[in-house]
Structure formats: structure tokens, C-alpha cells
Amino acid sequence: MNKRERLEKTFAGEQTDRVPVSLWRHWPGDDQLAADLARSCVEFQNAYDWDFVKVTASSNYSVTDYGVQDEWEGNLEGTRKTTRLVISRSLDWTELRPLDPTRGALGRNLESLRLIPDGLSDRETPVLMTIFSPLSQAKHLAGNPLLLRHMRTNPDRVHTGLNVLTESTLRFIDELRRTPIAGIFYAVQHASYDLMSVEEYQTFGLPYDRKILESLPSSWWFNMVHLHGQAPMFQFAAQYNAQSINWHDRDTEPDLVKGRSQITGAACGGLSQWDHVHFGTPNTIKDAVREAIGLTNSRRLIISTGCVTMITSPLSNIRAVREAVESTGA
Image (cartoon, rainbow, N blue to C red):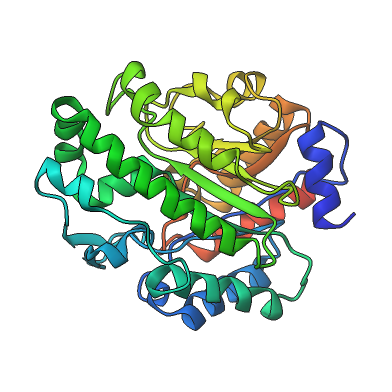
């Protein structure tokens, strides 16, 4: 069974030869040049033969060309610290304009996506490109505290900015159609009770998410939505047009079984990025994978973590994730 067949049967809840599996990580430093990011993704994939490649560009890539600056300071997740924001007044939201998706950081990541398939041992491996939600992009422009203040004090101006960020994202997606990707990994970071109310997310987040997800071409057969954080508003999961939902199921509610029951596609999880893959052992990882497979009866499950793998996680643990699905087949 090839990777696409395995994944499509998994989305449909059908039996497969084994449960699909994938891990992904940031590539600090390497994410600043197209060829370097492509090579890092390719080498990671060829080493472990995951069922799909999730391309993790730098977190700010969508808004770098507005003047956002960042640097990597050794964060274990591989994320870069923003050193220059570009929104300081609420009026600044009204001055944003859509970016040219073929230039700057956006163009650089398009080039990475064109390079990756040629280097893969299995050139049919599905590739997903990370797309950050407009609200996530707004955070990188202003920082969360100021974004939330402007949402509550000058909502019309924030909506003007979010509309521009959405248009910029849609233009980037139009260019992505020319690359050989299978779909996108859509990162939602603000559908969280730790950040805002349900009503606020329904106003400032969900409409823009829907506009982007409803624009995806039908030829993209594999799209995943990531609900970030320790208090996700999981009630929105079923409203997203995606084949799979990824969240921190080992670290927060809902758990894997309850979360999977609320969606129609596949749940992506079963492992903690910290407790299992970073601080655990190959044995604890294999036990966790067996547990996840048992709880789901090997159906509608993709084994992964709730977020990125740490850049210093033991390679023996990463190998164990890949080996675990072979030893526990469907």
C-alpha cells in the first residue's frame, strides 16, 4: 500500500496495512534559504520514511516582508524570536497591503516546495505546506497583547488588516497550486480559551479561516488543521474543511478518543512532543503508540505529536516513533 492509499483509507475509516505516521520540526537557520530548507526536509524524510512531509517554514515567513524581523536564540522548538514588530498604532492595520507571493520570504518558500520532491527517495510522498491563519499572522505583526487590545478597542481597523492578510494568503495559495503539494497544514493558534473568548474567535478568527479553507483546490486531497495550545476551542474542529485535525491530545482536552469522535476525518496525535519524543525512551514511545492504536482500533488515526518535534530530541526516540507503527500493524 503506498502512502496516498494508506492516508486516504485512514481518512475514510477503512482498514490499512498499518497506521500512518509522521513527525515534523523547525529548521532554524536552514529556514532562511530555499535550498537549505528543502535539503533539511528531504534528509529528514529520507532518513525516516514518514507517510507525509510537513514543511515547517519559519513562523514569521508570511509577514516577514512587511518588515518583521526575527532571530533564532536557541529555542528548542526551533522557533525564532521576533525582534521587530511593525504594528504599534491601531491605524497601522489600515495601511497593510497584500504581499506579492512570488517575492521575498513567500517566494523563497515556493522555491523550497519546488525543490523538495526531486530529492525524496519516494517522489510520491505527499507534501504539506504550513499556512498560518490570518489571526496568527496578525500576532507576528503586533504581538499578542497589542493585537488583543486593538481587537477590543478598534475592531474595525483590525478587521481591515485581517482582510488584507487573508487576501495575501489567498494569493499565496494561488501560487501554491503550481507546486506539487498534496495540501496544506493550516495552523490555528488563537482558537484557545487561554487567549480569547469564543465570541471573539467567532468574530476575528473563524470567518477568515473559512474563507481560506474553502478556497483550497479540490485537487489537494490532504489538508490538516492544527489547533494549537493547551485550551483549544475544539468545538470548531468539525467546521474546518480538512481531512485531519492535529492537537495536543496527550497534554490537554479533549483526549484522542473524544476528539476523534467529534470530527469526520482522521485524528493526528497519540504522542506528546515533550513527555514521549523529547524526554521519553523508545520503550515508552512504543507503549504510547500501541495504546493510541488500541484506543482507536487502528482507524482514523495518524500517529504524531501535538506540535513540532524538538530540534534536540534523541534520534533513537524519533526512530522509535517510526518503528512503532511497523510492529503494531493494523
